[in-house]
Image: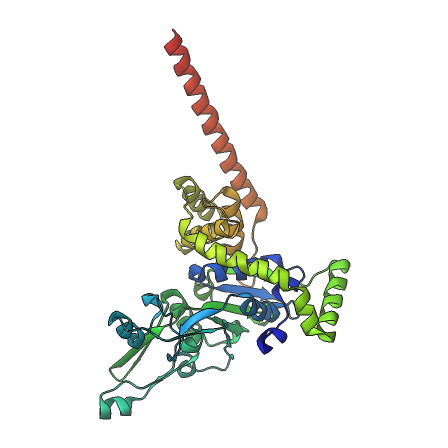
Length: 368
């Protein structure tokens, strides 16, 4: 067991907070969902879950001599140098490493985030000299921003742009440099300390709101597990090894299954209808809901999206996109969502009944 594993509380040992865990797992399966914003009071296992997710994820293969940890066989995850070598047919030396969690402090400047270009070196020698920033370090890993609502809005914009494009572009004095920046963005915040602007909120793929667990039995379980972990972390982790491996295998299987998942026009119409009836602005919610529903189907090992997948996706996608009044906490109108789903099921039943009736009438005409 590595030192890394010894110091990380296991993901499968986290009690409760099922929506938070599901949102993190879905982003691990499909990093193109756009990350997750976790809103909740202190002491609700937010940072524990993020670190535990990294320990849970399978090891990744990287180009051994690359500063960005490029993928050795996927061109879209390569920097310019690795891509050029790859196209020449050069065999890239590889190594295997754990998925990293890169922490971004709220005091981070733009240069610390995107990296810096040495302009003097570029002018004198005609070569681009780039000093990597947080986005380069986070490539193919997890970028974790605690108290993201306290981060400068401009820096949050940069993070969300890079997360959406999968690329970091740095331009200084007419010199431009870009590198791949594919990462799972996880932001956490305590709503009591202020909120993000609606324009920034909308750019996060998923959002969950969590609270402290109020069930006494569950709280006792948390105490016992944490005490057991602190008394003997190695033994505690060994006892969860089977569950961890099972979940890790489920993630790997779902990542492969995702390519096979299809979504019908009927489910797309349901997604559009949910967004319209819930009063969501723009089209980003529809697109993210579709991607999330497909990822949920893959997580459960299915190749086709159903109503339950769409409903679960809606609960994760719409919370931070609901229209609200100033100083009002965002809330998911669960009753309204349930009504929309019931209408969909009723419509589906009515269409089926009508189709059967038409078939019976056609049979009667043929008999006559």
